[in-house]
Image (cartoon, rainbow, N blue to C red):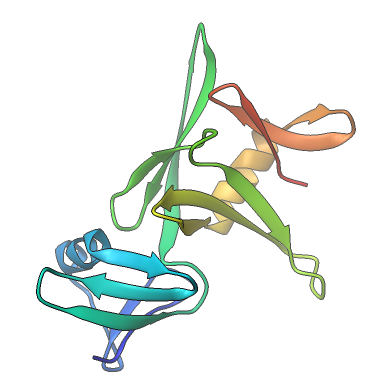
Length: 146
């Protein structure tokens, strides 16, 4: 099966983009990672797929604040909802050539999602400085973004 997930979260099958969100969401629920390889796994079949960067792409952010502090709640293009926490950490990798930051969030089973640029700008807007490092807080954890 010729299937691929692009850097911007589009799912491609045999050269054409899968346009039905429900189909993409269904495929994302059977996605597994083994070492550096990704597979769609059902009870009867295990099919390898190509992933350009990471398999998930985050497009939404909700910030909740209560007496326990702030929670950053991210929503992916496949309807996964993930709270940045010790179990699902947020990290930023800076491209050594371009200097462009790429923020990632752990989703499940060792698989990460990349935050779109708008979400990174939203994080930059709420960032605070600690010991000379800019970052954001969620669930009592501090995540550097610079």
